[in-house]
Amino acid sequence: MRRLALHLLAGGAILFALACSGASSAPTSTQTPPAASASPTAGGSHGSAVATPTPALDASTAPDGGRIRGYVLYLADTIGSRPAGTAREEMAASYIADLLRGFGYDVQVQEFAIAAGAARDSSVTVVAPSQRTVASVPFDRTGAGRVRGQLVDAGRGAPADFPPLASGNVVLIERGEILFNEKVANAQAAGARGVIVFNNEQGTFLGGLAQEAAMPVVSISQAEGKALRADLAGGLVQVELAVGAQGTTLSRNVVARPPGRECETVSGGHYDSVVQGPGASDNASGAATVIEVAGVLARRGEMGANCFVLFGSEEPGLLGSRDFVAGLDAAARSRIRAMINYDMVGVGNDTWELIGSLELQQRAADLLPALGIVAVKGQLPNNTSSDHASFIAAGIPSLMIYRLTDTLLHTPQDVSARVRPELLEEAARIGLAVLASLAADASVAGGGR
Image (tube, rainbow, N blue to C red; front, side, top):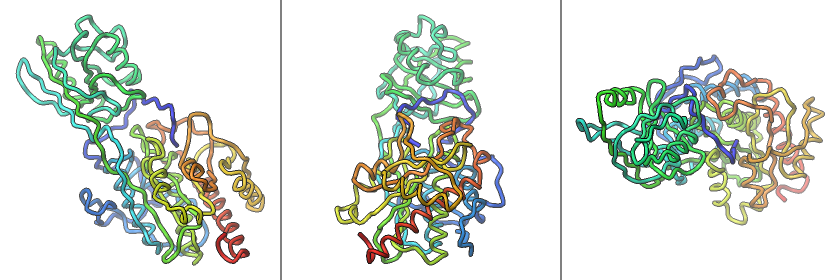
């Protein structure tokens, strides 16, 4: 789920490894797919090989909430946080592509370039009392530039933490208590020319700001931060802080087509997450449900002209779905009768919401009583959007299947333990019913529109 007004937390326990490697410490489940086997990356020659599990082939032709939750567990627990353009997003793309190939689809992994704060160069050099380099990670939306000055301890970045010496110098701030954006705004108000934020737990992290900063802002590890504070206790410390211009990196859409068929429907959802958490609800739940619908249709021998697209880089602004739609020619756009988007479909005690094009909202609403599922026609909250919007903007009828109540999205608490298998199964049943209804209409019309 894309929040247009995004505020990133200063606290939290999620660490983002520089290499984006290593599994989450969250517990696994018997529903997790089989053990990993070596596999090439989804991006062809880009990047190094990553390990992905061998796809699990199941004879069941009915959607299974436990099986869907197994996909959620792998994405959210084994891979973990999957920020746009990172190695973990690439690993998730490779995992999804292998599953869809295992079902018999023709699968392409489409790469596209995105701007990425993590792709920028940064450096922190202690100039005095003795020279050394401190490993750093540039914040998302940091300013660029090179500044040199005295290092000044500014506590946790509250207004009262900035001494007069902060003006014209570089401040050292500990992570925690208040938002990163507030820390940087307070530093700017104090006249600082650069900000170094050190972690309040072991390891380093990738921080983000809600607005562009006017000065360089980087993160460093807890150990380096404590070492700098110890240096300050011994006297004056001079540093040079530098952040390069905005870089680019690659993100990926995973596109599965029935062999020899053109797309008349697209079922999709994004598989990336925000950096702060493992993104179990937002949106491993939706991605896993798309995988299940594709698998069920394949096992039934009913692939038809139904395509499946798992989008990268939804969180930075629907970038994956926009790239996919932009790549469709006029004939391909006109051929697609419907897009079904699954976003946040595994939590909450409220009812289902059907969002998007009126005709598809009504079609789904008419089908659900026979399934024993209650849903209402609705719209997304203000300042939010999702991938179906990219298709609607291109004139393609679209439906979003969604559950509204999730107060923990975009937080470290968006974990797999919250995701309910029965809701995942219901989401798959809704999507399958809509696809079957569309297929029946196409059959009556002689195939196609």
